[in-house]
Length: 199
Image 1 (cartoon, rainbow, N blue to C red):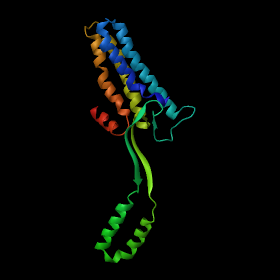
Image 2: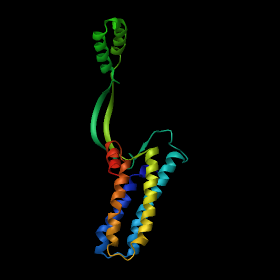
Image 3: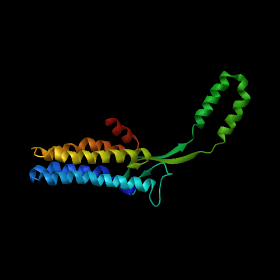
């Protein structure tokens, strides 16, 4: 079920768009607006719950893996970097040893042995592609459950709290925006840091 975690932020955004764009134009009733708002967040919570269950407890648990991505569902290569050299600091070690050799003449024998071993390393290459996809790991799963679970409670409470107000549709369109910024925190790499800082 982790392949569908891309729907977790999309469903509430879709619900907010329906309430915000069509709520006033077609004069949706409060019951329909509340149903769209609560239903979209409830579906997000159920997808989060099933994704976390399949990650850690399902019939084929994926738990020993550090993370899972939604590449099968939603993901694309954002920055194709191409082939990069994986040298694990071999060149920097050689430079540091040469610098030590100049400073410490007594360490000449020891450093020449290391540098000859370092030059015998074979060059390895890998593909560096920075992708945009959603990631599910232990921390993200906790955040998914907390944010969607508490968000669901807030939306259920808000339907009763806002009963009879004139901007009922507008409230449910705007209240989802900070919630969706938090949900975007499950994106990979730099977007993870940026969106969690926005919280």
